Amino acid sequence: MNSEEEFYDAETGLESDDSCEVSFKDALVFDSKPVTDGSKTQENGVWERRKSLPAEMISRNNFSVWSILKKCIGMELSKIAMPVVFNEPLSFLQRISEYMEHTHLIHKACSLPDSIDRMQVVAAFAVSAVASQWERTGKPFNPLLGETYELIRENEGYRLISEQVSHHPPVSAFHAQSLKQEFEFHGSIYPKLKFWGKSVEAEPKGTMTLELLKHKEAYTWTNPMCCVHNIILGKLWIEQYGTVEIVNHSTGDKCVLNFKPCGMFGKELHKVEGHIQDKSKKKRRVIYGKWTECMYSVDPKVYEAYKKSDKKTGGDSRKLKQEHSCECEEADEMPEVQETVTVIPGSALLWRITPRPAHSAQMYNFTSFAMTLNELEPGMERLMAPTDCRLRPDIRAMENGDIDAASTEKERLEEKQRAARRERSKDEEEWSTRWFQLGTNPYTGAEDWLYTASTIGVFVTFRRSLVLCLLFESMKS
Image 1 (spheres, rainbow, N blue to C red):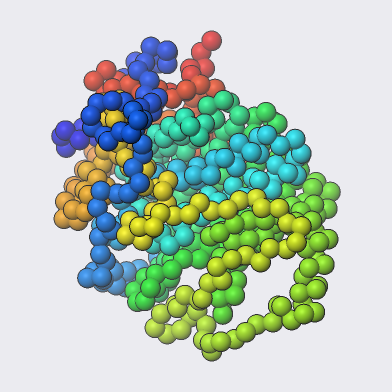
Image 2 (cartoon, rainbow, N blue to C red):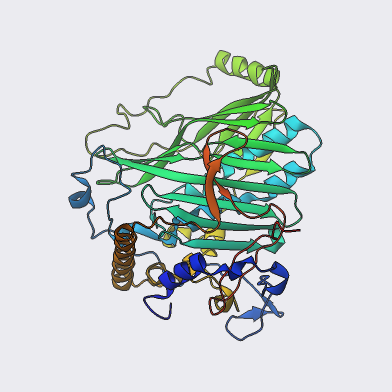
């Protein structure tokens, strides 16, 4: 940012300037193509995305969060200011975009003629969407009200836009679209965080909606609960748990997935099991695997026969090596993890996690995909919205390893946000969102934040010197 006011001036300009109603054909389009401007190392004339962050992860060993959290047991944490050292250098809007890491699964679902086959691939996509959280114990930065993020990946065939549409409660909305008009994926997330003494529980309230346009199908589901253990003492570790129901609103097919909790001896850690049933409630496929590793599907009869055989041979017996539970007095010790899923003969592999880079542990446990999300591509900054996450100085400072600057900038931006809110309150002015509006999800009937532009078109970026717009093709004829 060139000045303290730029981010907020951009928001004001977006609210007041009617010139956003221009045709996308008249705008400058940033298409992510290689740019030869000398700012990036290029090989064979092709610019490549970065494979690491500018600096390694900041150590948290000398910091204690107990002084902040000890009065917050059982409370919702969205209003609690946390030290920046416990963050990771991404905004929550960028974290949401990680749902798109395995977009190839959506493309595969679009290509399949059978609805049950499509459902099992959609189920794999729903599981893969939370896979990046494995060992990611850093907290993403809370987006500022009006903050945006635009992600364009032509080689993977999609564009995504997200916006922070509410601050209290914090709500983030996103909308992704296929470049070839094959699918739309959208949702709004209201993460509720609670501190329980030794752990933080995150409930990602909100509905995911995936529309396969060619098949005229819409799938909806909610994400599982997430718990980060050992906030105060011991090694941090994560578990996902809860029931996820994926509904095909066109066919009546349903997939029920059970993200299993750790359990007393850790036997179920990371496991996911479930089944697909048709509209007559007949089981068609069994789904199993781990959200940290892979997912398989198998015929229900084969699955039941295998389970019966396994029990007869004693394969299901528990080997109790340790006489303690995950709820010991000092720390919730992470159970030993079985690294591979036992594959039932006749199973089909639906998805396997992309291996993380060797230096991931020194880079906030980021995936290769996450490494690129805060990167400024050549030529991008002059076309980017001033409200974009990538221009936040606190996140940029943390990414560069400057914890003092990150903390100072985070506090400055948060105070400016509070000041702006006081001004709106004094003038009795309601916040006006730009790209999303509160409405009703047409498939679930529940309240949802919906993208306001047309469902067919392209993203466009204007410079703020004229007016900044991110648009799909206008609905005007």
